[in-house]
Image 1 (cartoon, rainbow, N blue to C red):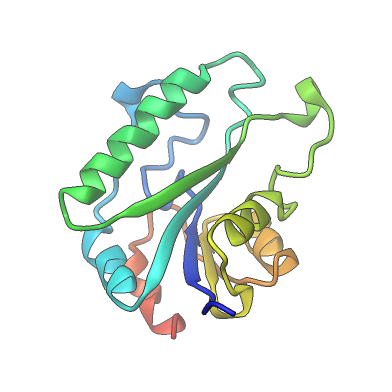
Image 2 (cartoon, one colour):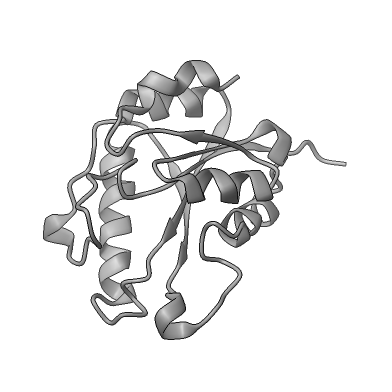
Length: 163
């Protein structure tokens, strides 16, 4: 049986890019935080880096999946310039008031479970860094250790919590 991977899942808004207080609807408003060195260190320790983000603004019609794709491409490119490979993005395009219930919107673990299955990840060796309680709840439900940070808090401040 092949060795399972370990991963650090990352919430997006407030963790990888600046928290705007509401949805980031266009790429011009997307301000990437400088967590380059911290994520490079995690990558060098053997962790896959995966993003798990609720994007209910799609269901609300505030922005398109195409615009979201541009934001994620920018994020991937900017981190790649610093030697960091953000392996994949998992997002929930739903909003309960517009699309009803789903299995992927955090605090449900669906986004993490997608990543765990796709990349053969061992949840017990993995983490989820987020700036909302729902991120920790989703992580716990997926068997992943949740780490709660403040919005826009440097990831370097929690590296000691990751083996």
